[in-house]
Image (cartoon, rainbow, N blue to C red; front, side, top):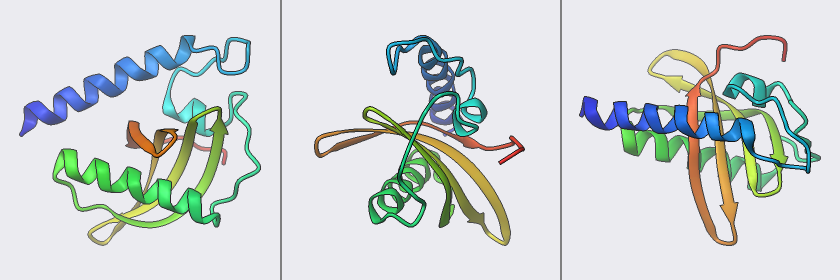
Length: 127
């Protein structure tokens, strides 16, 4: 089981490194970590955490993470959402047993297909 988690974490790191060089809006963005993405870094949105589509995407992220890591996180609410082209960066409040935590997720949506790109505990500040 640890191997799946290790592979998942390595994949997240690789995708975050790739995200640094992705040209989202025609200019380079300085996104080095999920914390940077959640803090803005040029991503924009007019969506709110109450939007049903955003809630659905956040639930998808939590469910996918739980599936791949055998975790039992429970979705509480969306704290913040950013959008660029087909990628959502969502800061999600969850519970893990009795403890409340925040996780940042990147979800790509293309048509009817969704893919969890990254999901990591959010340790940033300044939101």
